[in-house]
Length: 503
Image 1 (cartoon, rainbow, N blue to C red):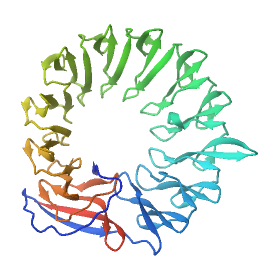
Image 2 (image 1 turned 180 degrees about the vertical axis):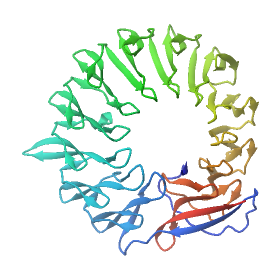
Image 3 (image 1 turned 180 degrees about the horizontal axis):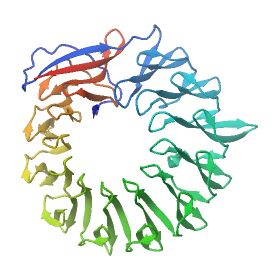
Image 4 (image 1 turned 120 degrees about the horizontal axis):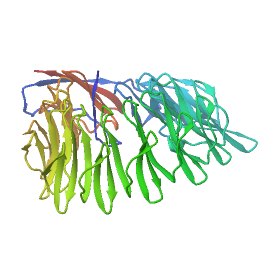
């Protein structure tokens, strides 16, 4: 399994690697880095840096290149077929990173290109989408005939029925989590229909975005007839209401709730049973094991937490509710007058001058809070207050829950705090990552507009002028990590930087 770090870096960057000769090791590890360049493009081809797309596992990259009036997608250094245009932001990797698709134009016709092969030609095409298991590709295409425009969904190289429009703004089409089903909304005149694996449902005046349950067994959406809205669950129409606000499944798919409005009242509905009415329901959340449901409500200018149907005491403000991963604990933040509290398993405690933000460890045994008090920020872990800073971000427990880190700003500089101990200050720091065994912490830092990697406080000797937007630092073993970059040596050159960690 690969552990990934997203790097917060500029979109357009240039990277230069030069030796750093005067650093001193800040920890017990030593680093050995090497640079692996990608194959250079043929003469005359120019790279368009902002187009770089990194695969989900950070093992591959693709980008656009241009020569004269022709464009091509370069994947892993290999130049693809030539086209008159490539669709903007249309290059996508499959979830397993093994496939790539994009849209391209030849003459006046557009195509979807999957792994270098053209599909059907159309007058217009949407950005292609892969199924969760990476085995299927779907997209919306437009055909114009005798001045009339029709749209179809193409999936697995098969064209669906023609519609006046496919409503993509509602995130349609959508694959089921197991990839076996595809649903989308088609417009027929002034009516809408949900289409599942090519089969139409009933016509309605309006339809919301379809949602599959996590186990893919159920499809739900809200629909409108006249002035009334109702849920449609696997084709069955539920009770009528003035409005369906939102709806969601529990993680085990056993529960479906929807928040509805009738006149001036809002309430939660589950299995056609109505919960208590309120003026507003702000947010709802199932516990990880799906056995509990909590939501924040507003009534008579007061805010309440409702847990499993029971209304908690009223507050002036409330936010940041979360369950432990084993679902045995629940915590949220609340304000009463000028005082701020946390309510942990029903126990109330004053903490800070703004709503504190709670964090549970992965094993559910540890609890941390991000607290702001007198304009200073600090982290409290296991009831122990940390040092105060001007700002704190990116708090994270390690995979084994025994360690933690966060990024802090102090005197206009940024530093990482690991297990309560400060690292060196820099101009900027990317979001760190733990190694899979939690023994190492790696991140990128910037000093005087130059970036370089740091592991356990030890600076790598390769200096960088940035990294790829959306690029990620990956631990593929506890003692080895890698990431992408760009060199500017006799033209732009993409590289992969590997770092070996020695204890």
